[in-house]
Image (cartoon, rainbow, N blue to C red; front, side, top):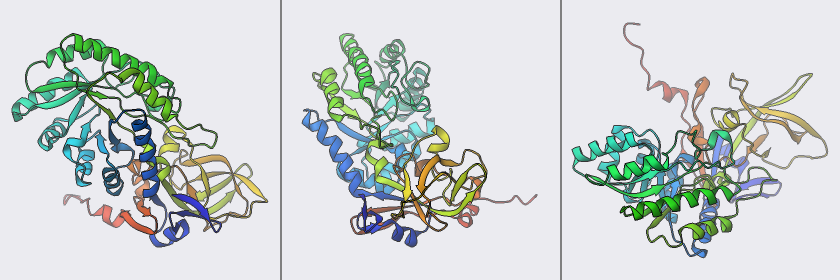
Length: 419
């Protein structure tokens, strides 16, 4: 876990300064102990409520193999949205029968690979996908377990770019289309046995789940009355985390109360797919100050990390706490923008933040709450190295993803002989 000791920030028993010295910057650092605590808090709340659903980690939030293996050891399966994520989940040791394939644009190649691997379930996002999967299953002579993702037209009250459950979003199908899909799949190689839902991400107020679960439960009852056997209820993920000190954490007890309210009589399997809830506060991004640039209008703290390393602020104007890796003299402060070196005006981690005026080139800053949708979105824009990742567990630490340097990147490219 991340904490202060001797005026320095630590991950477990290792100072972040020491990790930066060992592995270089910019650098992602993950705390295995924090992931454990987050997982146990969620699974414990579910068990206290009388439920024991399957927990399928949303791999898109962090697909580092060490993170996936750690969550697998804790008891999690995987919720994936691509063939690549399936490959990663399997490589981390997650059994195929603990993998659920979600996502709106599965290719035929991905679907064939999923059927060959024998994963637990495929969540269908359209009637067209059902037709395509039927043809593939017939050709492979296999039966596939499926659920239909319904779109309940519920506004989750989250950022417009991460809402997924309204009629205007590309995800899922309306109830009428879903009913036709169940009727179409009655015969053949499709075991259409479930209903899935996901209304958005970073939901701190769990109230929208009430309307979504209500619509889902009612639809499941209608399907049962029409003769369809429903054995799976996939409620998705979306529970948020407090990025700001003023944010109130999502009420897990209230969330589990809603589960009991709507699904207490459901005899089948309930699946949940948390992502950032397990890993967001378990990761930080360490970056080194290159310059303090002062103009007539602004003070810029220019760091060696950039938007290619952490895209969330550029994509969503997302807030991340940012603070020095060691406690500096606090009597004087400066208001500054914290920026990277990418040739884009969007390469800004924070605007008008307050940092100690004693901050100087060479000091380390910590960008907190970076364990979810950080490294998974990272790239090599401006021909930069792709960032390295480290995991800490108490006194143990290890490089869990090497820095992908430009010399290695160039090995994947060739210049044609005719140039």
